[in-house]
Amino acid sequence: MDDKLKIHLQIDRERYPLVINREEEIFYRDAAKMIDNKLNKYRSLYPDFGTMKHWTMVALELAYENAKAKDAIDITPCTEKLKQLEELMDRYIKDGASK
Image 1 (cartoon, rainbow, N blue to C red):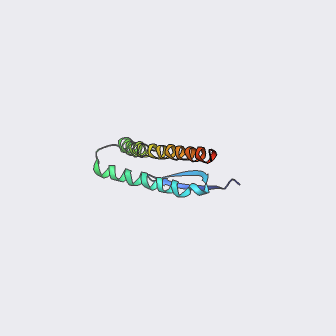
Image 2: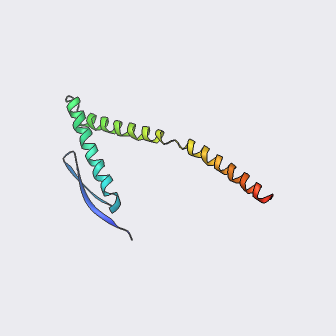
Image 3: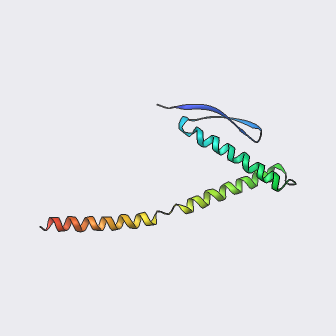
């Protein structure tokens, strides 16, 4: 069943209507809060910047966080462990077959 939900997010004093999957609602609401918090931070840090520069700083910070998170997800140790387990299973199967 397609469980859709219509929500309205408020970001930077603007309302944005969205139709989303119900299970994703918390992520959208958290993302909207995160954007507002970052906008407020940059408005406080750089009051002389215009709106576009504040939004650019928010986009830069979110893109940086995303890139850093992608880099942190290293599956190499898991891949190496799976290879070791595969070798162990192969030896076990060969030893069992020869008996």
